[in-house]
Image 1 (cartoon, rainbow, N blue to C red):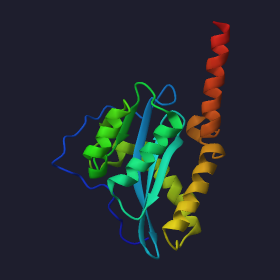
Image 2: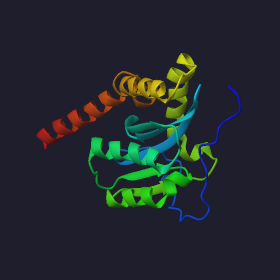
Image 3: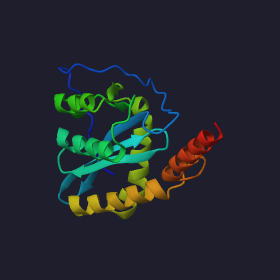
Image 4: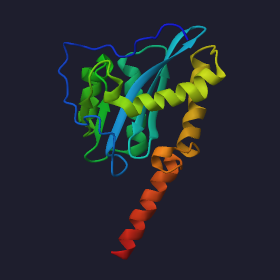
Length: 199
């Protein structure tokens, strides 16, 4: 496995949003709380970075991106995909660690522009972003370690695309009753429609 690669680089100069989650990774509906994180993959041509944005309610991966750099563009692209996919939900909280990318002016401004409230945990404490760390762990176990070694960024990107599609639509998760994230959300909206018809 080799030496661990650091993906959380704190920026001590930046103003830091509060931790609005306080390790309570629960939501009563979709688009109430998103968590975001970056992980890395070793390839023959160097490290590749993968950013995920996850809806806490269903564990649905609403945004993701792969890049050869860990710059703000990587996480901004994942966020833009999530916003495009879900629109601008009201009252949404976005939680991440205190990595410099997540505290960058461009990123925090984009969150504010979309009406999304920023929340950050502490540096180097996986419990403060436990759900995102769990998804990263599944990603590494189910696709990266199983199918490596990896040639380059293109190979990782294609594999990530396939894995995210499978994870969202077919992966059965014990935390949501052994159904897929997509099915969990479908059931939620079906129940909402049914109760609306009754009322």
